[in-house]
Amino acid sequence: MVRARHLLLPLLLCLPLAHAQDPGDHAHGAHQRASSPSDPSPVVVSLAPAARAALTRHTVEAEAHGRTLRCEGVSLPALLQVSGAMPDTPLRGAHLDRYVLVTARDGYRAVFSLGELDATLGNRGVYLVDRCDDAPLDAASGPLRLLVPDDARPARGVRQVEGITVVAAP
Ligand SMILES: Nc1nc2c(c(=O)[nH]1)N[C@H]1C(S)=C(S)[C@@H](COP(=O)(O)O)O[C@H]1N2
Ligand SMILES: [Mo]
Image (cartoon, rainbow, N blue to C red; front, side, top):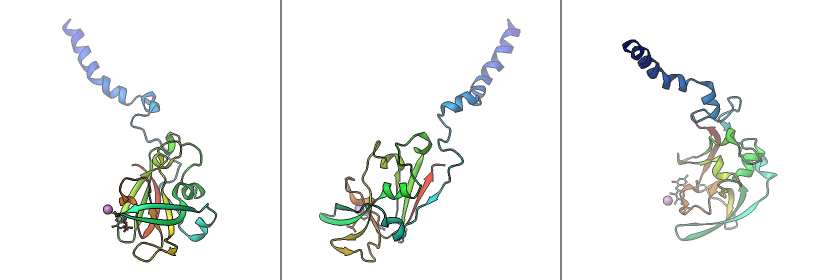
């Protein structure tokens, strides 16, 4: 009896470790990175006029501080899709741990998850606009800014957009 207990205790202590190291457990993925390691990260998205020229232009209205901005530009998910930074099919696990980091010249930053942008998931409309109220944006706002008309506050309407990258969460 004493002998059996000596064998059982070390065995029980090993169980959680053995479970965590079981490759079958990783396949079910609770803590495993979803993206394939072969997917590049970060992916830098070109903001050059040529990269945006082929995309449908949308008219977008958004409220900021009681004022309605009427702007024109392209859809952010469409830009990510033509850039190869986001699939143009419903997202699968491999891309659900990715986010878009938008940076501005003044250091302001905001993120959107790819899942938030996917039309079959969050379906959040996010637009990269270059004209508002029938004029190009001035230096305080542009030349490019984001508009997120369905956000309840305008805080992610990043002005002075400088960079857009898609990043796999670490
Ligand atoms: N680059 C940059 N973008 C920014 C901000 C900022 O400080 N810097 N402030 C945000 C916040 S908090 C708001 S409410 C809106 C205000 O947009 P508006 O200047 O067009 O009114 O801009 C957003 N975009
Ligand atoms: Mo704000």
